[in-house]
Length: 138
Image (tube, rainbow, N blue to C red; front, side, top):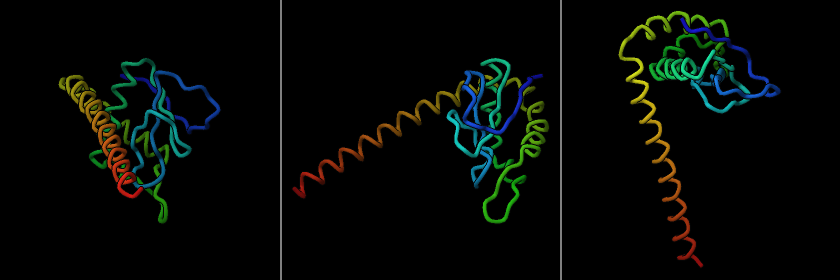
């Protein structure tokens, strides 16, 4: 069983390696983040291995829109801490017992690395395109 704590992010505490952040406002509520933002929870795991496992479990729950069912609010939807804990307590034992979990985490991590490389490539392409267009105008 993995032990973890969830607190509201307050920007005054030091970031540790064994924590990540979960967005709690907007339509992307439940999305795990590596960097904090004003509207997020801090999930702190006991070690880096548990952190990585919990991150990808939260990512799977967010991608499959499990958190969407627990959103409240009419104008800006948000995820309550109690609802987040309920979802995690419900799904972590199911997902963590899956023997294919850690192999899938490795594959997902490599997908994320490749996606980041492609984002950088697209940004550089846009910069080159803008540069070419500037030279046409000037």
